[in-house]
Length: 489
Ligand code: NAD
Image 1 (cartoon, rainbow, N blue to C red):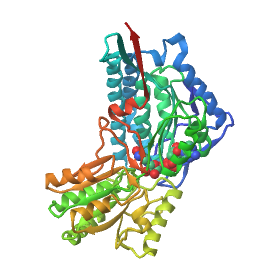
Image 2 (image 1 turned 90 degrees about the vertical axis):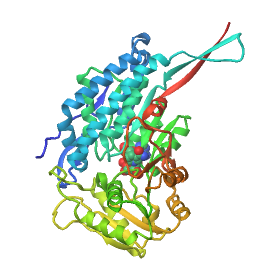
Image 3 (image 1 turned 60 degrees about the vertical axis):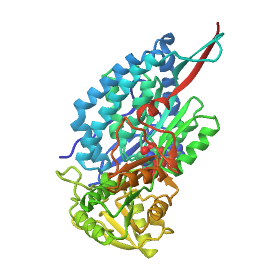
Image 4 (image 1 turned 90 degrees about the horizontal axis):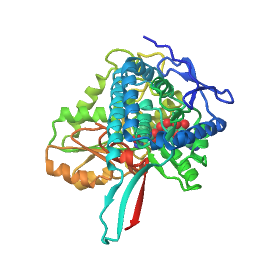
């Protein structure tokens, strides 16, 4: 059932505010291709107002407000946010699905992760109180030192469209737990649930200005935030191309950045596996979220002795993936988020054909659907390592395949990419899994699975996939500044 999209404004200083230039961006449902509402579009003028609101939230009430509140006080708000999201979960999940096209069951799982993440960082915020003034042992008795952890200040949180509310939460929850004030910039392609977070903040009476939410175009709202003189840190999730622009802007004022970028992850499948289980993880690792996962294991590297059997079963599994309106029960593959992204994915497939690869399965729009930006799950073989399909991130349900004979060859193929986000190894041999895990140049390695993600464990990349870590204690630390106080006694 369709769901009405709430009409919202920008969320600034604890309330809704019309964009100063009154700009709005249409929301297009990727399943029906219809305009179903619009979102406000912030410009540099709005960014200025929001940054001021965030800055004063840190220091209002002569040091008694957000940045100086105890972790326990901040935890109370984070738990209240989690509780409100839990109440609204069915609506939020539907809004997410209508806005970005992911199957409803996946949006529901995202909302559970959002709730879990706010609760987890509430616990860590409380834990921070006990860590304050941690003594340091010094070699001289005439000096005493201790360490204080302080919020970095005003942070800009710029997120993409594939997990709109979840990617926002990975940043908002630790930033607020640390005592920062934040400006969240959701993607212009999927801002609806991030705006609903504004309503949640109103309902829990989050102090004004602690979280501001400014949808808008990347080169406008995003770029203004990245270059704003009163933003102290930028945490960005998105493409490597945009990351370069953000780093360039940040460098002008020596601002720290955390960058969570794209990927072209390998899944290495050895000859000793349970083929059906390995096929299931291969499918999940590449086609979940309609293939739009930054850490997708979209390069299958399979031992040549099982390759024929493996591909046969992979095709059979793919034939059974239900492609439909993502609100429909049992849907496993919905549409790509936008026409632009759909065309990019289709171009990758046709370039692969042009370069001599074979489309073993899929490669088209599914014939049974008349509307929507759908792409069949696609499996590409006869790939060489110089082809675009091997080298570049597709961000759609497209798997490319190569075979190997030796472990060394498999590792070389796996690391043959500029990216280094997620990678997987599948084998019954524990020692081999340990060896390969060590040698894969990725920020996350999955053994006998692909993609499971827990808010307790660090997430981030190497090489072109970025640097810094989100989630876990590492995520909290990235919003804290460490100060030493040393006293002569
Ligand atoms: P994108 O880089 O186009 O946009 C991401 C965000 O940056 C959006 O909010 C956009 O408005 C903003 N933006 C665009 N231009 C900007 C500029 N000049 N200055 C400041 N902000 C700007 O990426 P996308 O298409 O939204 O997302 C897909 C990419 O994100 C893929 O490469 C994917 O791998 C990556 N991603 C990474 C992770 C991760 O955790 N590593 C998670 C999800 C997505």
